[in-house]
Structure formats: structure tokens, C-alpha cells
Image (spheres, protein in one colour):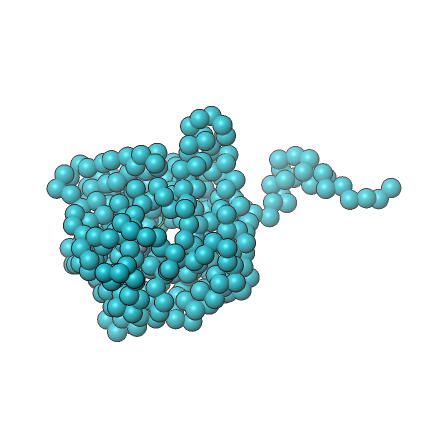
Length: 327
Ligand code: PBG
Ligand code: ZN
């Protein structure tokens, strides 16, 4: 009697590992985000209430955490700056001694082999918390925002960033940033574009962490509608045509279809960003004892790899490295 016996390949650990389609995590494919605060207090370290285990850090404390993670095998870090002062032109986003610029210099000096990725956006530096220039009527001025993004990109390049990750979702930003970089002598600096970035409620805890919640309105006129998938492909193709070297899909866990679409319709590395809310939900349920936190953490990241992600941004990266869960 001949019929399909799928259980033949599930009968033992060694047999399952032998047939596994998605390999275990590699440390090279994990990016750890850090929040660095501009503060006089050199030993500033504040846990983010909605993100247990994640901190706002002064430069000195950032260096300590990164040193620990590098010791555990960290390959790449993503930096978010929280400036001392915000204004309506995001001046502190592109100033030479801005907090992100200082952090890049510090990390590249102490850890020359670490890939330092910087977010390129204005919301953390804007008094109103939006990712672009705002009119008095609350409209975002797309084309007026582009030169500020370009200035920000150049100053982060000058500080020594290895990869720039624009996350603002303005139209034409990749082209503007690419041209500015090439013109300034940074033709070899890669751009990892947040190409398919949705107007998601999963970003809630991040906005606590980065103190970047919009003071009025929402981000729906620039971030994508959560109901759309073909639009994601338009955004991704446009960014690649404008010069993006890699693309990010964000959030990750509820967007496996978008990751798969990006993978099958492009030839660039696809990065999935497991965002703050995804991290916080797993942490909260684990703290209540409702789920096995470590198992769910690994299963969630495995799901992103299975969907097609080549690279993962995850707040779990430090822990995965510490616990030896990546090769
Ligand atoms: C800034 C930015 C955000 C995130 C990354 N870059 C927040 C937002 O768009 O409101 C979200 C990251 C996360 O939730 O972990 N544009
Ligand atoms: Zn932003």
C-alpha cells in the first residue's frame, strides 16, 4: 500500500534537521537597534516601559551595551538618536555634532568592524514629531523635506555610517539621497530603504522609546495603508529604480505576504523589521507565563526567514547572541 507518509521525515531530531528548509539563524543576518540619548548625564540608562529589556542610553552606556553584544558576536547595529532639542526644521538631525552623528563616530572608533546602520528620518528631531516639513495646516511638504533628508544623510555619511536607512516614506527621497551622496563622494555607501513601510499600530512602543509620536494627526499620508500589497511592490520598485541597494518590509510578522512578494519580485536583499510592538507583545505574554518566550521569539524570526527575509532587524538580537541561539 503506497501513500504519502510525511511522518517518515519527522521521526527524529536528526531527520528533521536534515530535511529542514529554513536554516537556524546566523548572526550575520541580525541587526540590533539601539536608542541613544543626547544628555549631560554620562551614565544615563532608562528602561523603556513598553519595551522591557530595551533602554534609552547615553553615549557611554551605548558603548558598553554594544561592547557586550560585539563580544557575543554582534555584526550590525541600527542607531536611533534622541536629541536634547527639537525644532520645526529638524536641525539636530543633520548637525555635525548631532547625537546620531556622535554615536556613529564613537561606535566606529571603538568597533571598526561593526556595521553601523543609521535610520535617516526627521520625526525624532521635529518638534511636531512628523517625518517631514509641516505646514501650519498640518500638511506635509514632500519636496521641501527632501533636501533636509539629503543633508541628514550626508552628515551621517561624514560621521562614518556604513549603511543609511531612510524611513520617512517621502516620494523621491532615495533618488535625492543617492544623488547627494554620490555628489559628496560617498558613491560606495549603501542605502537600505524602508520601502514598504506601513502606517502601523505596531510602532506604539517605539514612539515611547524614541519620543517621536506625532503631536497631531497620524502618518497615514506618507506611510502605507495596511490593506495594500500591490502598492508595496510599487514602492519597492520605485525605491530600487531610484538607487536603493536593499529594501525593508516593516512591520514583519503580519506582513509575511509582503516579504514573500518582495523576495520573488526583486533581486536585492530583503530585510524584515520585527518592530517594537511585535517585540513587546511577545515579551508581555512571556512575562505573564502565557507563552514560552524563547520558543515564540525563535518561531517568529523563523517565520520571517521562511517568508523570504535575508536580513532581520529585531530587538531580540542581543538576547539571541547572548544565549548562543545564532550561529
Ligand atoms: C521613524 C521610525 C519608526 C520606526 C522606525 N523608524 C516609527 C514611526 O514611523 O513612527 C518604528 C520602529 C519600531 O516600531 O520598532 N520613522
Ligand atoms: Zn520618521
